[in-house]
Image 1: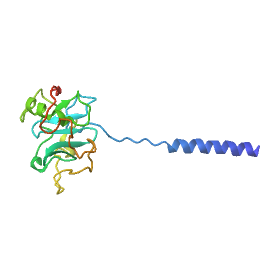
Image 2: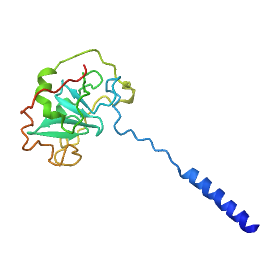
Image 3: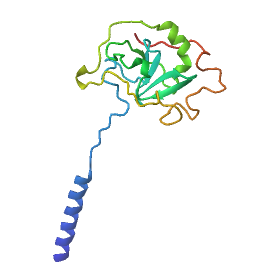
Image 4: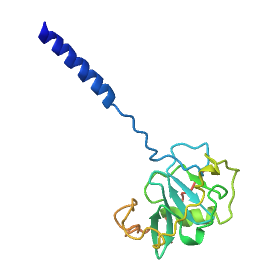
Length: 177
């Protein structure tokens, strides 16, 4: 009888400890930023015509051309330190899910020129979080090199495929606007 009580107590302890061991972790990886346009799902990138840059929602990084190559950085370059992401127009690239949206940059640049505004947009969040500016002067003007580069292991370059900063394979850029 004593053995049965010990086994029952052991089972109860095991069950209660396993219940406490279940921890819920809620990490916002791949969620759109508060300044992003509302009403879209299954989107990986925005194109920002005013700054000729892309925003990778999953990696939470801006992608822009600087110094002869495409750079991935958590922040926009210094010349856009005062750019208002809430008021700037975002082209939602809902039909592109690769890792290099800049492959279609020439098309995007023509179709969505600086100052382009399609249909009115409403931001997901509000300005209250003071995260409307994506600039940080960290002394390196972005992310040069592979540190944080998730667009391949080539340092942000397109190599040998005819697509890159000014070459174009055409026919893409049907972003909702």
